[in-house]
Image 1 (cartoon, rainbow, N blue to C red):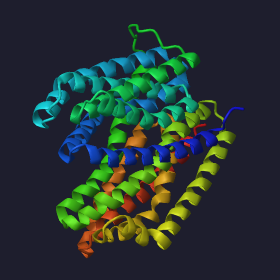
Image 2 (image 1 turned 90 degrees about the horizontal axis):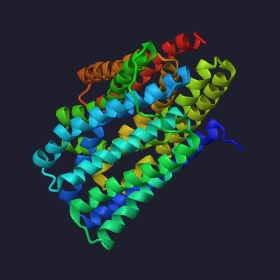
Image 3 (image 1 turned 180 degrees about the vertical axis):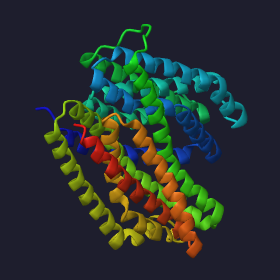
Length: 412
């Protein structure tokens, strides 16, 4: 029996929770067998590599929308290959030397080259899974990803006797290569890999490239919102308040976003794009009603959980000096509903092809954040001004995207 999009969505939440917990467990274990400085260098290097490949992530939404509109995958995939090659060359020319010589990651070049190559290959194939709407394979790959990391680390560290940074980079590279091979074999049964050939750029492909670049900026702008909060805490407030946000508040918020927001763009966006170009209003309305109901339930549970148990749990898990994070999380929990609803609205707007509006919404969030932070700080020196600015940014983006979504819906 074929799964519904809602079932795929619920499965993704369960798998994301499994991956987050397993990944967290792996970090705790690595902290016991790898030196702190070595581990910090490794995760910093991986973050830098991930940021350098951000353009590849930005392509996902535009690949989904363009394919649903044209049903022609050859030109889309071949153009994507050009950008992957450009990203790889840029990484080898600038990012890898920076990581090795300026950051001080003391491993042979081939470890770094293999890591960036394997990450690029995985992103290339995972973007295709979204484009072809292979939801089951997306969930399976997410499930085995942390398991492969654990397997390759244990193999390198204990069986082969490789220690330190070398073992960590072997884990990353081989896990990504293994996962890519798994995806490629199963994907090939559903859709053949487009032939490598010269692409003739027509108006549709020009629009695809434009949407891809806009999508990259939009994704980056969304991530910047969190990092601006970190900047304001570090610039205007004490290290203790920064610690409350960095150690407790941000991980909880990012965990909720990973569980309940990222699946919107993984699963709902491809489905909404298909329904939009089929002009299937009834199914779009059903999907929207289901997700809005789901969002209200999740938000109610989030608020209730932190109202009744949040402070006790924070004090139980973390040292007592982190108790102040409860105030930040209790405020943000009331606004998480708008984070979820805005994710649906942006997904629908992008599904309709209006990528420029999606970027405008994300940029407006940065503007709302700055405006309400300084406005609140004018009346109060409390660090809650940062959290309030963040909350109002999510509310402002929701209101703006609500208007734009209505215009996009009217085009069906």
